[in-house]
Structures are given as C-alpha cells and as structure tokens.
Image (tube, rainbow, N blue to C red; front, side, top):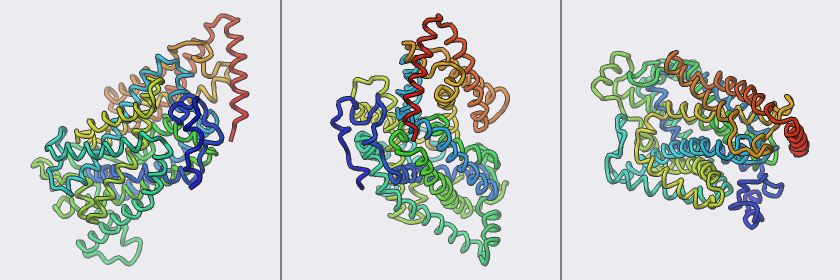
Length: 510
C-alpha cells in the first residue's frame, strides 16, 4: 500500500491543496499501476450500470447487437485512453484545466470549465440518484417512476442529501483518498454484479424451462427471452452501431475529450492506461449485461415479450420502472442494496473530484477542498431530480459531445502544431487571455454537430466521431491565421520559446 501513502506534496507550498493543480506532478508523487486498476474498476462498475443496462432493454437491442457491440465499443474506448490521453498525460503531467489555460487563455478556459464542471455535476448527480434508490428500498419511501422529473417525497430528498454529503466529503480529500476508497470497494462490487447476472440467468432458465447443455442453448435463450429486440415506444431505438458508438463514447469526455489528463498525470508510465480495460470489460460489459438481464426478467414476468404487448403496456403506462435499488434488492437482497449504494459512491467520487478541479481552475486562489465541497452541494441538488438519471443514455451522449472538441484541440496543440512550425501553448507564450482558434474550433464544431442532429436527422451517438476531425481541422486552420498575424520579431520569439518547451517536454517522455 506504499503507493497510497501521502507524501510531501501535502506540505509543498507550490502544490495548491497538495494536488498539483498548476504544476507538473513530480516524480515522488506518481502512483503505481494497481491504483489505476482499482480506480477504473471502481468508477465504471457503478450504480449507474444498473440504470444503463435496463435502458438497453428498453431500446430494443438484440442479443447479437448488445454482446458484439459492447466488445467492440469498449475496445475502442480502451484504445482511446491508451493512444490519445495517456501519452500526453504522462508527458505534460498537467491537469486538463491548466493545460487548456496554456493553450486557450484564461478567459476562454473559464467558459470551458463552467461547461465541464456543470456536466460533471449532472453526471455525478445521476450516480447519487442511483444510490438513493437503494436507500429508498431500505426505508420504504416512494421512489421515482420512469416519468418523474422532480422529487416525489420528503424521504427521497433526505436520502439524496445524506448520500451526497458522504460522497462529497470523500471527493474533497483528493485523488489519493478517492483511489484508496475505490481499491477497497471495487473487488466486492465486481462479485455482486456477477451475482446479478448469475441470479437473473437462473431465473430465465427456470421460467422458460430451457435445457442448457451447451453455449448454443444459452445463446438461443438470450435471443428469444432476454434481448429480444422489442423496442419500447418513447425510448431510443438501438442497433449494433448504436451499441458500439455508445460504448466507445460513453466516456468520451474522459478519453477523447482528455478529462482524464487530470487522473493519468499521476501515472508513472503511459501504459498504465490499459487499466481502463478493468472498467470497460468489468463495468461496461459484464455489469451492463447483468443489469439488463435483471430488468429483462421484469419485462418477461410482465408478459412484455412481443411488440404488440410492449406497445399496449407503454400506452397504458405499465412499463416496469428501471430503478437500480429495487432491481438489486430483488436479486440479492441486502447485499445488492449495499452494492448499489457503494457503487454510486465510487463513481461519483472521482466525478465530483474532476468537477472540483474544473471550478477550482476558475478561482485558483480558493482551495480545491472548499471548491469541491461547493461542487458536491450543487451535485446533490441535481440528484434530487431523477429525470437526469432516467434519460441517461441521451445525456451521456450530449455530455461527451459538449467536451469532445477540446480534446481534439489539446491533441493537435501537443503533437501537430510544433510539426507545422506553430507554437504549442500559444496563449501562454503570447500572453493572451482569449484565443479565437480554441473558442472558434469548439463552438463551430458544436454548432455543426448539433445542426446535423437537428436538421440532417443524424442521431447524436454518431456525430462525435466526424466532429473530432472537424474540430482538429478548424483548430489547425485558425491557429495558422492567428499565429501568422504576429509581427516578425514576435513570431521569432514565439518560435524560440516553443522549441524550448518542446525540448523540455520531450525529455520527460515515460
């Protein structure tokens, strides 16, 4: 456990709050591989998996689409962490927010940090909502339904307040405490999620009278009774491609959008990012499938196995509510409820931590601890409104799209601009607080992507990939225009500084 022992960073006056928000993480404060295994497994084997899994069933996925789609999509996500985020994180070793400030200028980054921090608050709020559903089962107060947007009982409000307070305190103590908490909780949660899958499979075998003598028999059961491809009206209608792109981009803000620069800057080696596979294939494969099986059995029990039956039930408002607490309680009782509560904690903790860093970058003279406490209060307020969690598939896609262009900007600034004779960290070198290349690339890309969704009928799950290349090309073009306007002597000075920066950074390659 030596990797988790706090070091002199907490007493270093140049490291604000002991987290190195505005300087590279030094050698003595870097963490070993096991810390990232626990963090990724804990963060992505979470209470929200019990919400996302049922939403796949409501979206009418078939067995082939969900299994193959998750295998491919999660592999693409792991590669995105390894090839895009980690190489920059372990070289620059800066938080996303400070690195972006060097590229874009403080005034530009304030807008981004507000958007990023608020998005993280909504995401963490959904996780607190999930944990509160387990508390509701325990204490017996009314839980939200699929149609509820606002709080529906005093018990719900109190449960959210208590869960949110605990999560906020853990996040406020910093990344090491977050990682320590995840390492303790993750192994047990994985076993509980596996138990969800085993129990629900046994239910299906007993209810259908299926004789299971081979893998082919299991696959036939999956196709005919579990993931039948029947879509519930009013919910997204998923195909194989939807599943692939959703699995790939469910954490787009973290890898393609570069938010995990703030986490992976602590990694001793770039390849430690392969630890993200622990989250993707334990959480976003096994846990999603196990959770969807739990809800699919509820649909089976209700006789909702054909399109006509589902349509009739939807019109009458009789579709079962995909609430994690009741699902977990039905499968594993008290152990399931405890798992949902703790799983929400381990996911919301690093998310609130990231949100706190985003807001702290706006007010750097306020301690990260205090900012994180305030962030947790805002997140807890969001969690009281269950509509965010009920629309999680669409929100996750929108959230990733909002932050994706900045990831393209950081990638191009670090790797491409120096090769084109342009200046890396242009705002810092030129002394600008506002840079149009970043602001223009971000806002124009968002306008194009949202325009494609609104006017070209392209679903939001599919616009992020072309959007990344649009943002990259826009940033290169706008950087040429902005930097070539410099006076000759200014350009020369910038080029000299950029060369020095490149040389210094390259010497830190892991």
